[in-house]
Image 1: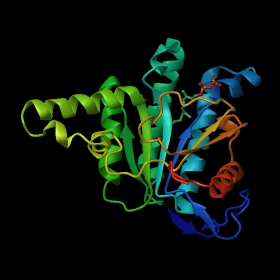
Image 2 (image 1 turned 30 degrees about the vertical axis):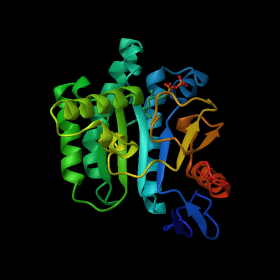
Image 3 (image 1 turned 90 degrees about the vertical axis):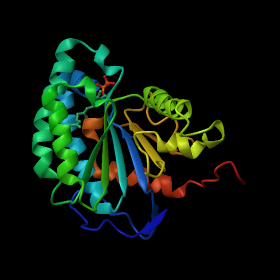
Length: 252
Ligand code: FPP
């Protein structure tokens, strides 16, 4: 846990975080409400996703400016393939164009881009863009941005268990080596701190298969804003709520 002061750049439009507040090291965001945002305006769902992509860009850069060390955003779940083909197609198109821009976009902010989830589910072109983004940002030392795509936490845990079983079977590990730490070390987020705060806009009280293992002691903040309407001020509010929480990790 780190102590930080005001937002570094004091960007217009964002109420500065006043005084010294405790910032979370790792923030997770379930970017929810794109569809409802579009429906309210009589627009196709894909218009909501397009707007949501702009919010993602703004909030990611803002988190980096504030000094958040890790940001994990839920962009596409293992269950989202069940959506109508035209919506899935629109999302894939959005990811493609966004990842091309992102190569440039996050350079100035020194952001390290990582993808968590099963990349093999995507087209070769998207997989290549993911690889390029990871490769070209690997050396940077700014905020780590995990983009969860084709991510499901149950699937992540099953993969971890299979990897561990294989190592026990071939004698590299024994039962006694299987610890909580070993499981964490076999997740997509290996080596990263667990999320301190998960924000879910759109007013839904659900975890939706997001970071189940990692969120054992995470603080949740649910906000009544659809993701495309989510602003830097809303992030500041979530951070203030988090700073007031008393984290006891099962202790007293
Ligand atoms: C959930 O809202 C949102 C998604 C399934 C897609 C999230 C994707 C983006 C924000 C696009 C930008 C991401 C990147 C990485 C470029 P929903 O469609 O379930 O909304 P609803 O609950 O109102 O229907």
